Image 1 (cartoon, rainbow, N blue to C red):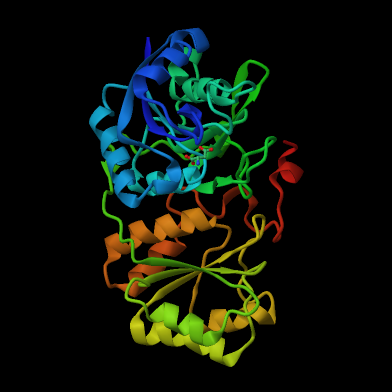
Image 2 (spheres, rainbow, N blue to C red; image 1 turned 135 degrees about the horizontal axis):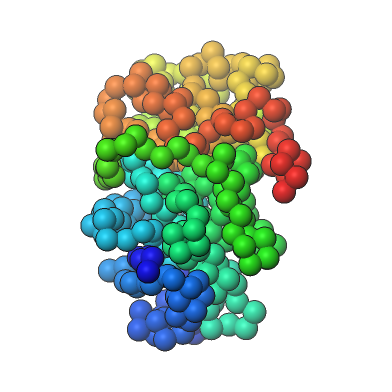
Length: 358
Ligand code: ASP
């Protein structure tokens, strides 16, 4: 038997009532089909989170608990499934990807758009897909040594995933093709897209420190330089993710750029620029409108999702402390396949479908 550990954290998947709230574990266990019926050869141990939540209440402290939970059960299971609400699922997937080092076993996060007990639910299909990935041995497939998201027939890299909403593709991975997908009843894996297995002898390490002094600022027409300056002066803004326009563009305004430049020079702030466009990719200096940011000394987030940028900054800042140069260096490294890769250098608006015929 292939053993899979399932952690139920809450989310629409297990919700009932009006307004919707998570049902208890015993109720969920009764409502869920037996694992062996969904994927033959898979045995499940189901546990619940200490507090069942709507994922909009998740905090970094919960991520630490999930990571420790995986660490405690790591040796006894072939893979892990986390049932999670969809609202912050991409943040949790990204955070765990950075927190779990030298992972050899799949950690699969899933959820659903409709509750398990509602007609037309996607909960069982998503759960079954997650069990297939986590219980890979039962299917004769290699392990995906990554934190991934199983949703609507596709398996996405966790730190590349984003919630898009809607029925068709509630989750997507705008800059990286799926790691696996369902074709009929068969799970098709794309081995060339997976992260490599850790070196022989390397064992799981959990980075359980996160520095949450990260501020996420979205540019919008009308954001005043003095507002930006005030935000950057907050003690809680040691690290900043700046969601700029398109290819990383920002107003060509002296006062605006001076606010950023001063925050970096005088306060040692680390400022990482990502694109607010789902398919956009930062290319500083491509337009005159991003040359100022480049000169001011911001870090390019390239094609990182905002979710990955925020959680990567939290883990990197915890490691590097006050050493801004080290933060910059680590932020520019591809740590978990969160940036660059397959689509690097293919232009600014790549749609994976176009390149991979998906
Ligand atoms: N509010 C829910 C949650 O994130 C939404 C969902 O699960 O789809 O927990």
